[in-house]
Length: 245
Length: 206
Image (tube, each protein chain N blue to C red):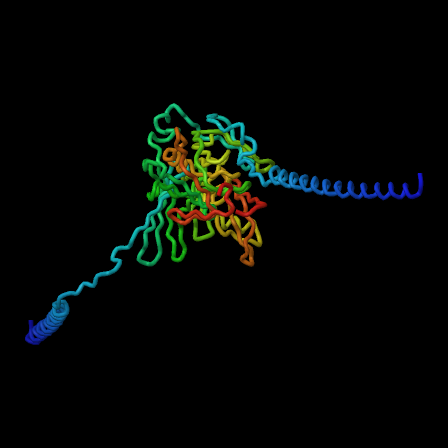
């Protein structure tokens, strides 16, 4: 092989190498871009700020009717005997499915700033009372509908000094996952945050609201529930970063 | 009787008649003056608040089975008489819990969270930052008294902060006390356990 021929081959190889290198570089860049986009999108999806359950232990397992008369509850490190519930004597009093003619005008507003709940039927105010929203977990802001009503259930969660296990939680109206409006027999500090994300009410108020509000039936949604950072009567609900705008 | 005695007796009688006549005349003068003073038609000026108003308030227990009622009765000296009674949610079985006479500007009131969750205790708010704690039955709760003042006990046991408000019940026997520091900034919150009167500082503020 002459020097001339070698020189030609070397130039040819060099050109091919440059050509491959350039393509390779473009491909690598393209792949890197795709991987970046996938990783970014995946991270955004999987690592987004998840709203934790209101009741970390009973979150998914105990969203059902439970009456456990005589069971001992725990709250704030203290043992507590829940009030007994006699479903047999109440069957005629409370309608779990709501009234026969659902009323789309019913709307429950919760003002987190003032810790006050308002219940409106159209322009008529049915109730205004103090509540306790999330202290240990935040209460998510947004617009929801009651998805089920339970006369009683068990709620448990927290850890350490904040652990709680409460049977016979009365008049539960879940509106978003395990976030609900319900009676609280274990404290009386309404008007101040005191819950793990739910809306605590006095049992007497929760009972009246439970009877008035409606669970979904047929094609009708349950009573609307708006959790507001601030509420201005009669229907202005100010929400910052609602989870379902 | 001598003539001299007769003259003296007659003189005494005449003097007595003159004196009594003078008093009769004066009394008639007074009566006439009074009659003249009252003779013009009396003008009755209507008062804006002719009757002292009695204020009432009540707070039902969280489960609706008990009710605490307050009557605030103003007195003519500017003070107020407070009468607190407890009854069933239906209004039956009413009994007296506490009565007190309070000088202005001190005040007593029933807060929203007055009842303990199990209705065994209740507290009455004294001014803005005090709380008088009772057994709901009205039985003595301490040293033969049927109430104690949270603010007094708190001030004795905890230094550098003063109670700002008792917000309510964290559990069956725990009152939540918010405080202010000496520089008037927000202080820590405390639990006040009613049976033992023990005080626990909390890590978070209410």
